[in-house]
Structure formats: structure tokens, C-alpha cells
Image 1: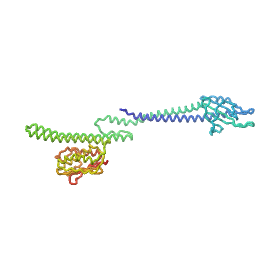
Image 2: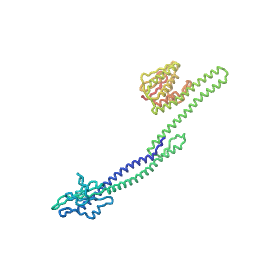
Image 3: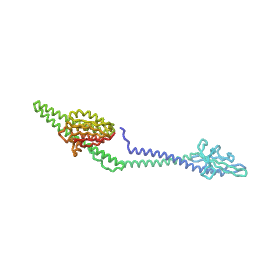
Image 4: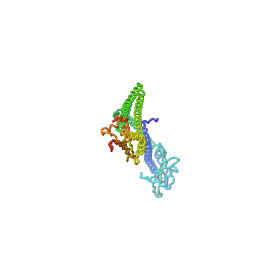
Length: 461
């Protein structure tokens, strides 16, 4: 059996995954923001370098020359993390100083608006390295020379990448520390939140197996109150079910003990006699008692089937059935019994009536209602089995009927109004249980010609 995962660890795992995703996203964002900040800072340095070099460009004997100060070379030639390259072209784009073949600006490179200078920034490759280049135009206006000199200064991007990585690493470190703190905080918060459940579990485990009292109202979070109430409601229903079963077992034992004692006494009395007629009378009486016990045992088994059928209905095992067809089949099966008792059994079911139910239970319901009506109808009487829309079943007889003040009690187990009539007192109790299982309403009414009418209203299918 798969072991369920811990709620605490599941929350921490999900939170950790979320924090990792946030850290990765924040790290990437920090890297690109750091790269942007590094580009801004180093672009300003590149432009300052270009301006310093441009300040040393002058005309001598009709040509331009570039006098790069030693301080500028010392400052910009090498960097702690990158390398600087520069180039100076005259107004005819001829090299007058610096490194050869330093890449020119790509066509269409716009002039920067961030600085008051004729400068363009762009990325390129030089000597197999990624470089950031600024191209600065210096106006030259002399009597014999007029045009634009160009100064290019390039820097490898190690310093920029190093700065961006440093910012990203610092951001990830801070977020990592924050994530660890958040996970620890969540761990303690969840542990504190689960303590009421732990107390509830302890209260349940310490109970005896027959202790079905409601759970104590321990201090639990508002979200857990419905769970505690549901458990208490379920425990209450379970307790009531056990009480009904215990009461039923006690009643059944009482009902079985009396006829068994009478049967045993009758047999013992017959054994003391030496007359064959007495033996025969004893055996006939024993046979009748055995029939009654068999009927009672069958009724008890029927109650057990009702409970199983009700569980099947609750679990979605109901079928679409034609109540008229069920009544027709039951009427044909009970016709010989009615004829033997001299009672006319009639069926009124002209059209199909559909409902959802359990066929075995519905047959049991019909059988008990018709058998009860036949048992209380004198010879020459009538019993009518009627089915009508939307889903109504009626069984009517012209027997003695039941007084209004006793009509609720007849659904109690082992209750019998007339002790002279053979029966176990379980027939209508079984009918009531089957009606509850099908969410049907059962009621007792006076018949049209005296007697009793039993009406069961089902939910139409």
C-alpha cells in the first residue's frame, strides 16, 4: 500500500520549488540589470577615454596627429578585468594612431542621445574577443583642413560580465538566505498549525473501540471545524446504527426464544406419551412451529438483504426498472396463494412506470405488502395491487384496517396488532426500511370499502 506523503513536507517541497523558480528568475533579471548598469557605467568610461584622446588630436604641417597622454595610456591600456583598444582616424579615415582594424560602426548605428557628443556605441568582435566600442567624431576646422576625425575606443567585456555576475550572485545569495528563512518559518508555522490535529489524533487513539461519543472540541483552526463536525456526525450515525443492531438482536433473540421454548416443551411432552395419536399431534404442532420459525428466519434474512441493498443504492447501484412489470410478475406469483385463501387478487397497471431502484428490494417490498394484505383479508374479500404515474404503488384490501393511532407503530420491528394472525411482525418494518433506502414516502389510508390502503410514492426515474 502506498504510504501517504507528509503534508508538512509536501508544503515545504512545493514552496521550495516555487522559491527556486523565483530565484532563477530573479537571478536572470539581476544579471541583465547588472549588465545594463555595467554597460551604462563603462560606456561613460569609454566616452571619457575617447574625449581624452580627442583632446590630444591636433594639426601639424597640414596633417593630423594624436598625442595620447601617458596618463590616458596608463589608465586605459589595461584594466583589472578587461583590455582597452583605441584607434584615431583623420578626416580621410586614415589611421594616425592606435590599433589597426578596430571594427567600425555597423551601418545604421544611431548616435547616442545619452551624452552631448557625436558618439555611437556598438558591440563587435576584435582579435577573437567580444568588445564594446564607442566611435567619437571630432570636428576639425583649419584653414587647409576641414572635416571629421574619428576616435574609436574599445573594451573587452570581461569587466562588464564580471560586474553583472557579481550583482547576480549577490542577489541569489540574498534570495537564498531569504528562502532558507522562509522555509524554516513555514516549517514552524505548519508544525504549530498541525498541533491541534495531533491532539485530535491522540484523543481518538486513546479511546476504547466501543466509545462512540462525539470528538472533543479541541482548539482547531476554523478550516478544520467542518472536518470535526463531519466526524462527529458520522460517529453519531454509527452509534445509532450500532444501537439499532443491538436492539434488533435483542428483539430477535426474544422472538426466537419463545417459540423455540414452546417447541421444545411440546416435543418433550410428546416423548412422555406412549400414544401414537399424541405423537402425531406433537409432530403436527412441531411442524407448524418450525414453519413459523422458518418464516421468522427468512424475515430476518430479508432485513439483512435490505441493509446490503440500501448500501448498493447509496453507492450508485440502482437500476432503471418498470414498476408495473414488477407488480405484474409479483401478482402472478402470489395468485395461487390468494386463490388458496379464497381472496380475489386484482392488478391495475396499464402503462409502464419507470423508477430507479434495486430489483430484489422492490420485489421484497411488493411481496410483503401483498402477503400482509392477504393475511388480513377474510375469504371472499379483495386485494387490489395498483400502479400509477408518476411512480405510485398502492395495495388495498377490505380487511379490518388499522386504527389511525396505531399506524405509526406498525412499522416497528416485531410489532403485531393481532396476535391471532400468524406472522413475525417484521413485514411492514421491512417495507419501511426499503422505502427509506429508495427515498420513497409510505403512508397508510382508509380503503374505499373499509380495510386499509398502503401508498408508496417513489421518485420517478
